[in-house]
Length: 282
Image (cartoon, rainbow, N blue to C red):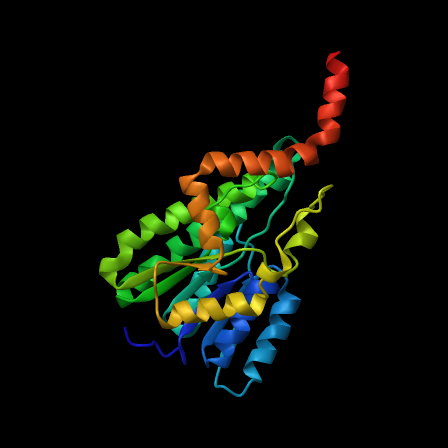
C-alpha cells in the first residue's frame, strides 16, 4: 500500500485541548494538514491553533468549541468544517474521560451517564454526522481512540471500559459497512499514557497498583501511532505491543486473569470494606 501524503488533508481532532488530542493536532500540523480542533476549552484550542499556524508547514488550524455530549454540537462541528473546507478526509474521535471507582460509588449522572455520553455517544454521533460527506467523496478515514480498556476490563473501570468496548464494537461493525465507499476505520488501543486523565479520574488505590513505568506512553508516542495509521490505514493497533500478550491471556485464559486480578487487586483494595461487613454480620 502506498503511503498517503497528509499535507492539505482536512483532519478533525476531538478532545484537542490537552493530552493525546493536543499531541495529535500538533503532529498533523507539522505534516501540513488543515486541522479542526474540537473541545470544550476554547481558550486552549485558540492557543494551539495559533501555534500550529506558526509552524511554517503550510498547515491551517480552526478552533471550534464543542461539547460532544450534545448532538447539536456534533452536528455543528461537521457542518462548520464542511462550510470552511468542503470535505473531511480524517476524523479522529479522541475525546473521552474516565471516572474510576467501584460501581456502587459512581454517580448515576455525573459519572455513569456522562461517560457514555462523551466516550460512546459522542463518537457515534460525530461519526454519523461526518459519514454522508465521506460517502459522497468516496473516501475518508475514521480513527477511534479505543484504549486497552476496550479490550480488557479491570476493576474500577466498569463504566469507562464499557464505553470503550462499545466504541470497539461500533467501529468493527462500521468498518465492514463503509469499506465499499472507500472509507477506512481504524482503532487505536494505548495502555497507560502520561496525560491529565488520572488527575480527573478520581483514582483512589491503597495498593498503588498502576501501569509499569516502562510501559507508560507519552501523548506524543500515541500521536505518532495515529499519524502512522493515517498514512497507512489498518484495522487496529495496540501500543505498546507488549499489551498483545495481555489481550491474548484475557481471551484464552480468562480464569487465570480473574484469579490474579481478584486476589492481587480487588481483595486488597476492598479489604477494609470486607472487614467492616464481616464484623457487621457476626
